[in-house]
Length: 468
Image (cartoon, rainbow, N blue to C red):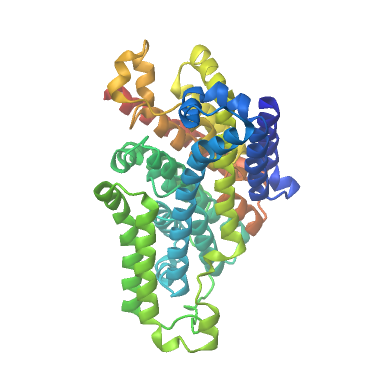
């Protein structure tokens, strides 16, 4: 049964990595892997529990004779719910942050970006787009940020080839910005929730590698652009269907939304509560302000139709379900014991976290970056620093302690893998569909320089670790 569950995961990963050709929905595949895996697991629950959790199961029974019903209750209450909690934390955080983005977007708070980016200088526009995307993606969801920036580019630029180059810069900046913070990408959020990293240490360590990984490809893309860019006229959209806020009101809402997200790490450090609760607090505050500012429009029929943010629509729900499905699928494979067996083989034969990071980067270029990072994160638990001296090879195991280099390597490398090939990230797939970009064109013009930038960033990380 372990082989069957592992096979389902592998087949699912193949379907996810080839979804751009087969048009198989990756969220559906991830949910299928997660749900079917746990159903199969509980069918052979007694064998798995006795192999992986004999002491916990004995304490659960409290002297009662074991039977199939007891095993099912133990799995449901003591094993499965733990993974439900981890997945729910990520899903609720994503739902809150995406809702914040939708409220801000519905009220025209991002219209300032269109004004900022309107210039005839191609290189100035390229760097403005990249920097703005990098900063926003460090605080918001990558997919939402990418979609918003691509729509803006589509409004400004008439030339398709130029949109392809600018769109590639958006994908690179979004992936690099998302990797910079613990709230910018689901991978960093998972590492933060399990106690593998601290928010400030994580960002400080990855700041220079992420900046280099963004700046070098953007510089190279700028060399392929003409001096003057072909722009088309634009107008700030009339938003009478959902708001008619003046400039200071939109600025205030933007400050509350983005500033509130910046406060979430501080909220977590003070309260020790899960970060998603801080995100929900920011969402509730912003929502109340939205209701107050739009109180005069609440009786308008079109406004009533938009009272619920568009984040609850089908497209964004797919993103949340995909994350849940991957976490459930990886979790059930961990509970079979197959992951620990693989981790032991890697420790015996590879024994190098930098090699693992490089492998995760190549996997992330063809498989989804989140699925890749979760697979590698599950290989090893977070080691308690107090017990580090008990390990025979404490230098190697020290890479897996809280704020250890392994977690940062995996977060960085899997995200940069999404830059090398567009199929490695959801935002990259969005660009492929929007501008009909072929993989061959991207690899020749963008992918190889992203690979070089990734290796330079990795070398910077290695040098920083060596110094400290």
